[in-house]
Amino acid sequence: MSMFSESLRAFLGPVVEHLDDPSVTEIMINGPESVWVERQGQLTQTHSRFTEDGLLAAARNMAQFVGRPLNDENPRLDARLPDGSRIHVLLPPMARCGAVIAIRKFHPGGLTIENLIGYGSVTPEAARFLQVCVQTKRNMMVAGGTGSGKTTLLNVLSHFIPNEERIITIEDSAELQLNQQHLVPLESRPPDRHGRNAVTMRDLLHSSLRLRPDRIVIGEVRGGECFDLLQAMNTGHGGTLSTVHANSPLETMSRLESLAMLSGVGLPLRALRAQVSSAIHLVVCTNRLRDGSRRLTAIGEVLPLDEKGDYRVQDLFIFTQQRSGRQDRVEGYLSPTGVVPSFQPALLADGFEDMEPAFFSPARYGYPPPPYFIGQAVAPNSTAPETLPAEAPETLAPDAVAPETLAPDALDPDALLPEGLEAVATGFEQEPYGAAHAASDYPEDAFTERKQRDGAVQRSPRPTREAVLKPDDTNPALTVDDLKGY
Image (cartoon, rainbow, N blue to C red):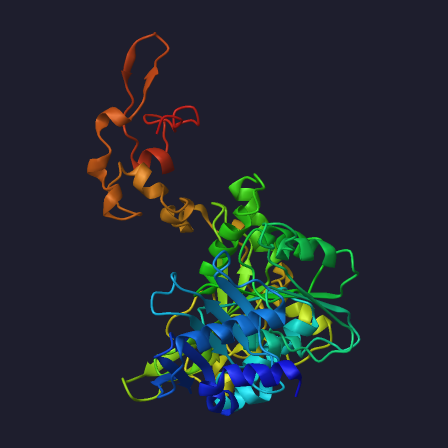
C-alpha cells in the first residue's frame, strides 16, 4: 500500500469499513452528518459521521493525488482513487449541506461476461451476439442513465477486443479496466486556476487519430467531441466503443445529434443526421430497474434515414418485464425479437456460422415472442429476406394457361384497374383510403374544365365504369388528355 493510500484511508476513516466491504457498490457522503451506501441497488443510511474540517481535508487529499485544483474557484472535482474507484466532489456553498462526495466502487479486477450472465443482467445468446459484433468491428454505443451500468458493460465489451490490436482509451477520469497488452490510456486535463493549459476530450481524440489506433474506446461522450468521433467512425476507424446518456436506441440517435451540434460545425441537419446514422451500427441500452438490479434492456440496430430524413432503428433484443412489486425482484426476460440484422450475411461471411437467421428467433431459446418491438421479425427456421430465391417464370406447370391466352370476356373488369382507380371511375362512390376521403369531400368545382373544338367552355362530365372499360360508338373512350384534370 502506497503512502497516499494510507493517508487517504486515514482521512476517510469513518467510511473505511464500507470501502473494504465488497457488497457496497457506492458510498454517498451528503455532508459530515449524512452517509449512505448502496448494496445490491438499494440505498441504506449508515451511522458514520465526519467532522466538517475532516471531510474537507479528505476532499483536498483526493484532489492532491490526481493533481487537480479543488478550491473556492474550482469547487468541483472528478477523479479516481488508487483502487480505481470513481469520485466526485462538490464543495460548499454550492452544496448547502456541506462537502458532498460520491465514491463509486468497481469490482476488483473488473467484471466479466460470465459474471453478468450469472447475475441475470444479460443472457448467453445476447452475450454471444455482442461478442461477434465487437470482433467484427461494429461501432457500438452503450446508452443508459446514471448508475445503470454503462461503464461496467463497456469494460466487459472491451474484453472481447483481440489482444493483438492497438487500443487507445480516452476518458475524463480513468475508469476503464482493460487487460490487453497494447493499450494506450489517455486522460483529459482541466484548465488551471488561470483558465489555461486545458486538454479536452476533443484534443485527445484528434491526437488518437494520429497514433495509429486499431480501436478507439471513449469512456463517455458529453460534448462537441461527439462530432469528431462520428467523423472517425465514418472514415475507417471501425470497432469504436463509447457510452452516452440516453434511454433507448432511438433516443440515442437524437442525443448524439445534439452533442454533435455543440462542436460548432455548421452542418445542415439532414447531413448531420446522415453522419450519425451511418457511423453507429448498434446501440446497447442498460437500465437500473425498480428493485435496484441492472439489466441490459435492448440491443438495437441503426438503419439508414428514411425518405423524410428521420432516424430508423430495429430492435434485435428486447427486455420484456413480466411482474414487479415494491419489495419483490423485477421479473422479465431478455430475448431476441426475431428481427435479423441487416449485416447478418456479413457475419456468416466472417466465419460465424452460428449467426444464422434462426439464432435471432425467440422460440429457439424457449421465450415467447416479445409483445412490443420495432422491426419486421422473420419466421423461425426461415432464411433471411435477402437470401430468398427468386421465382422463375419457367417453373409453371405444363397445363397452366398464360394470362394473355385467356378469352377477353373471362377477365374481371375490376382486376384491370389499379388499386384505388375504381373510386375515380365510379365518381368516388367507394372509400379506398378511409372516411377522410369520402365522396362528399370532392365537390363539383374540384373538377377541371376543358375547351371543346368549337371554343365553348363546359363542365367535364364524370366518367362511369362502363365509359372507361367498355367504349362503343355512342360513348367513345376517353383519351389521356381527357383524364388530365381528374
